[in-house]
Length: 147
Image (cartoon, rainbow, N blue to C red; front, side, top):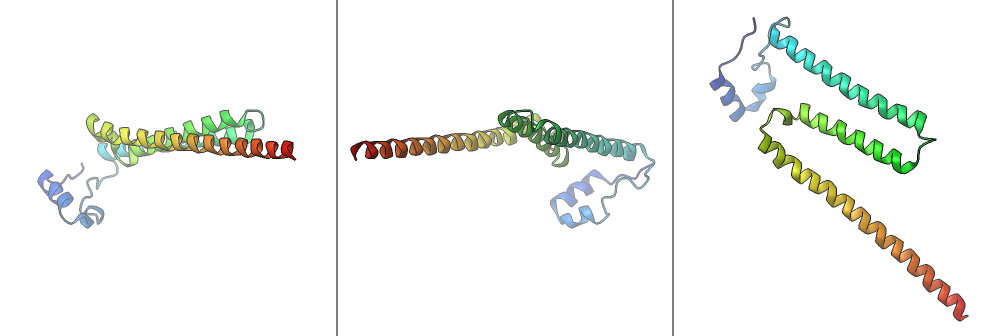
């Protein structure tokens, strides 16, 4: 059977000196064969297999399909898989999945807005780069005609 610390003691450790959290004082599962430990081990293996599967799909696409599929589609697929992997990592390792729904929304909405912000500025920069190139070509063409 595993030994669990008193909840008041856990709260005091979180609010006070957090070095105790990692020194073994907070070791809840002293028995590896306990139900809690087995549940945690299953969760860790599930995370491992999910991340491995996404990585294998990314590598397969990069090695096999990169020659036959357009770059735009590949970029979209890679970006999608990367966002899924990043979201899963945040969900599990940053414990966002354990939080309340309101807090998750509070974290995710600014993230989505930040991604939109980056995409908007890249599109705007690309537009102005294209406009400058065409205006230079147009100006260069009128110079040629004037000569």
